[in-house]
Image 1 (cartoon, helix red, strand yellow):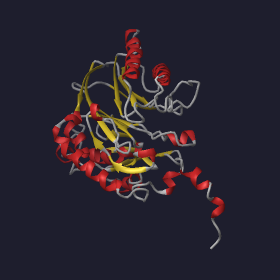
Image 2: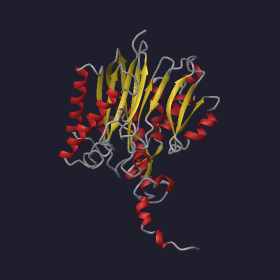
Image 3: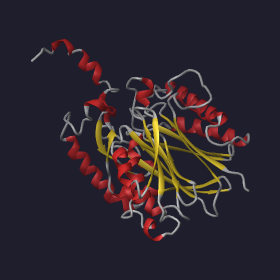
Image 4: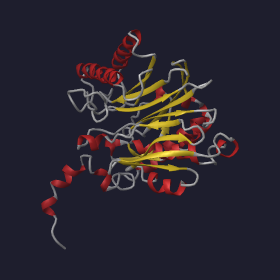
Length: 366
């Protein structure tokens, strides 16, 4: 049996250029240097440094499995050095996702977020890595449901015998710190009860019923819950494997042709459309947005990342971007009113509580 390959995507915001809109070239260069050094030393098989908004995404392949301390330490040290460069340049929010001074073997709980998959390569192994900015992990709930459970999106669920039995969804409750696995299509309605509330319930991973293989995995970190205060939005990533008993590339991308509303945007406190863009256009500036998503496609070949193809650069997504801009304009007209501003229970970890605290004594009994 061939060695299993591990695909690790670890991301962090260590400083924005300018404001929260992009990543400075010096930080990307530093990340490239660190990962190239690790590749030359044999720790990594291959790597690619991606970015979306003010987030750096380290895309790495290796043979050490998920949650490997050496890989996570590499990512941590890379972000630390990028953070030092950000501080020298006085970039905004330098080091904001690094919540501790000490690495403890895993980046989870320390600020950076990780999505990792270990698998045996198929004859052809296409993967899509989604990277989002100005939103939260629950932003993937609707697209993942459509990709793996909606026959109106994914024809393979109807006509491909390898997919016809459906998939299993592992859902995490981010408030109660619990998880549940629900199968589709038979438990579809139960699944929707939970993932329709993306601020609390998040799709962590998806498994093929036919082969048992992991088909997708996402980050589930809620940064503000970890820190107990507002320090920025979570900016999630998601890995999706394609073809050969899994959804085709076009089925994986299709949900993003209709922008859906997600939480985040300005100050992590507003609702807006998730706009699919190329990596070069992932520079959210209008009201620090609207939220962006980039899709990078790779063929994994003996652990090597062949690519990327910048999938949302396709003109076929021009209408989606146009619609996202229209939705953004409509939502902006609502100003500080819900549903553009998030509901109060979602504002708990923003700067809103400190404003309300000042007015506590002004309230009188009716």
